[in-house]
Length: 337
Ligand code: A3P
Image 1 (tube, protein in one colour):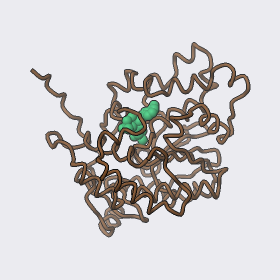
Image 2 (cartoon, helix red, strand yellow; image 1 turned 90 degrees about the horizontal axis):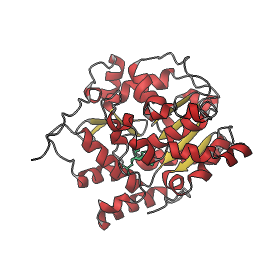
Image 3 (cartoon, helix red, strand yellow; image 1 turned 30 degrees about the vertical axis):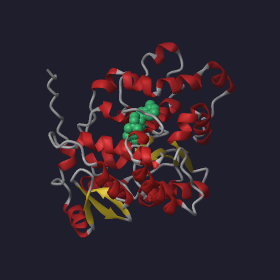
């Protein structure tokens, strides 16, 4: 006999459009909208498809977030490895605090999910409060966002704070997102059909999509302002994490010392943030986020090329073709096609 399934959490936050300020409701109702992959709605705003329930957070963040020059913002599109990079950036920036073995045993990543340690702006801080007080965050403040480059609050560009952008092979990102949205489906609804999601993805319809425009915005910014925008791919990080963590440390102005390079600090950070370590921690096996989402949903396989197990050759070609067409004159190429 099969064990009965635990009850699904209620993802109340996803369906709560009712507490939107009137100005926000008015704006949303004036925008083109489409159904997303799980029958909630996306609105086209500033050239990108935003989940409607998130609008309050997007507008509040754009209107109120005051970036400081010392801030660090991790920017990703969903399912590009945000959780991993949050952990790495947190461990990197706080390494001096947890350098001896005693303090390593008390490392916050051992008991808290990376999303709790590095909060999202529009998806957490500015969704919960119109203008949150961020003075409790120590400098350098580390936040995350999924906002496209052109929709970032003006203060981010003006302050010239540092942006770390992480993207991922679109086919793996697509499959990762498909798995994730299936978790968000109301109980008993089964999986959302993959071909339907593929159609939408190839039309640019995904949260914070079109995917290509999201990536291109940050790629261009990284070429124009390499001292402000660091552009990284999940696959590069998987292939040579030591090199890229060191590059990140240089970019963030906290390079590893010769002693740290010799004494295993880099490997310690990578071990702490590895998929195997993080996914086996109790907090990430049984904890939940403020959204009701389970922490374990953010750790699925963590591999490069898993799309091959889900996409037919024809489906994969469709993604390749649309990406080739959109990226063709950008000089940007995804690895591991
Ligand atoms: P898969 O679904 O392909 O396994 P995000 O954090 O942006 O939501 O992305 C989630 C993806 O990152 C998932 O991909 C997840 O397994 C992977 N991931 C999470 N933690 C990771 C880690 N420590 N190392 C590598 N990949 C990780």
